[in-house]
Image 1: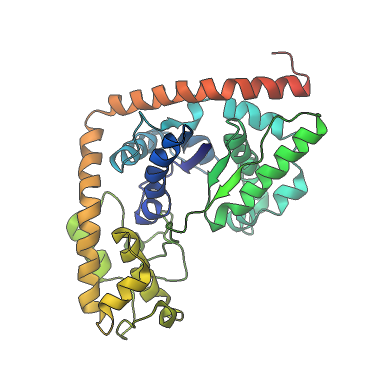
Image 2: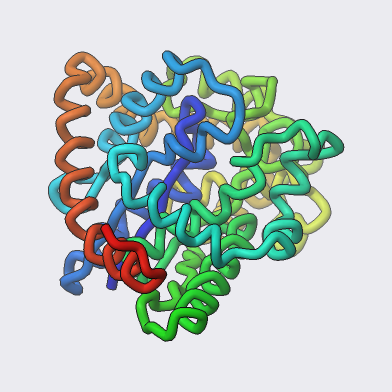
Amino acid sequence: MRVVSGIQTTGNLHLGNYLGAIKQWVAMQDQVAAKGGDCLFFLADLHALTVANDPKDLAAHTIEMAATLIAAGIDPARAILFNQARVRAHAELCWILQGTARMGWLNRMTQWKDKAGKNREGASVGLFTYPVLQAADVLVYKATHVPVGEDQKQHLELARDIATKFNTDFGVELFPLPDPLVSEAAPRIMSLRDGGAKMSKSDPSDMTRVNLTDTDDLIAQKFRKARTDPEPLPDTMAALADRPEARNLVTIYAALADRTSQSVVEEYAGQGFGTFKPALADLAISILAPIRDRIAELLKDSEAVQAHLRDGAARASALAAPTLKEAQNAVGLQI
């Protein structure tokens, strides 16, 4: 079993990233290691180049996000943690796979349509083709499983299509088809101000999200001001179907506490958000404050964080090299 996943280096990580991805990664590194497999988690700095970035910010974010992952529980000794740009095989295999991928496939990518909007002519080529790089990210390691959320399932399907076409076109059995790893414990965390929008670090309002570096007071303030409704909590989750903001806060509580959402509403049934929000804030602070403090401690020695990334890149490169060589041989490149 080989699990591969990445996260883009575009700024502070937030509660949605933690509950939706990082917490699951921490659990995976133990489960997969127990089965004799590998977990590779990377900082997708090459993907960050598809939109405008300040070079100094990109470099700083890479180190900060590595520190955040370590602080949250990713162990560089048990998992392979690295930044994408240090492993050249990602970009090299991407170029080879661009000869296999088809324009029609990429044109159908929902995220391309969403991110480019009406200005497709002004969008970067990288924004259009980055799903091919995503395919290379996992195929270069012959990944068996890829953790995905609902918004990334289409991209994994594309990776499987590319792998199938490459194997068929060149008469090889080089790339296994990676399976999606969808954790029921990984909830979709929504904005604190709009229950219909996903929590995002790109939202212009900082009050829509809880950052992993927020102070205790700020975390409490954000939950206190989170949008809700005047009705008390019911005793079933089904009764929250038409109350997205309330449902989101219950989902966050349940995910933080490792409980079912149903057990949470049963506990707080009949109580208003004047009671529930402070309890949620206290729970979030108890979990996030140690992570925040550990991040600050790790960033005092950024060279040590960089050393972990260099070591991870060396291990990842060793795993990727044979696959890249096989792909080069398959298409006739003499390297």
